[in-house]
Image 1 (tube, rainbow, N blue to C red):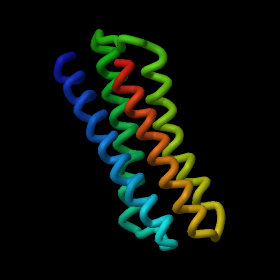
Image 2: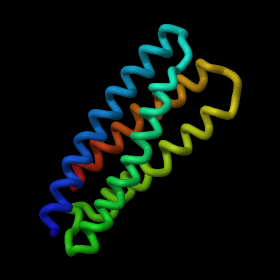
Image 3: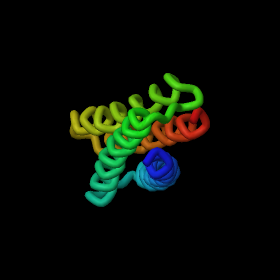
Image 4: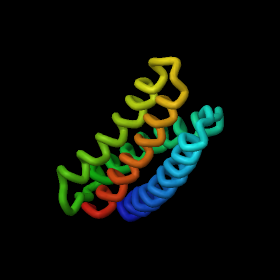
Length: 124
């Protein structure tokens, strides 16, 4: 059971890192083109936020099943940061009427969270 949870936790981490980089590139491209974010970007962003929460639940399940992160607390801090930052950035970006601000905030959140994903992978 623990090996299966660890496998899916590792696979999910790599997939989320790829997802965040692709969305970061997409958002950055949109920002520099002075275009509005599409519904496809927003929905992909929300899917990433949801999958991040599922990733966290897989990690908690692996921990309960007897696993442990190599660096322990730091690995979990990166995960909690990602779970809270993505919806927080989404809510913050929806607060105004400026389309460029929304694009900048969400693209920036993708880049920042991709760093958190990478650091989480490195710490265990």
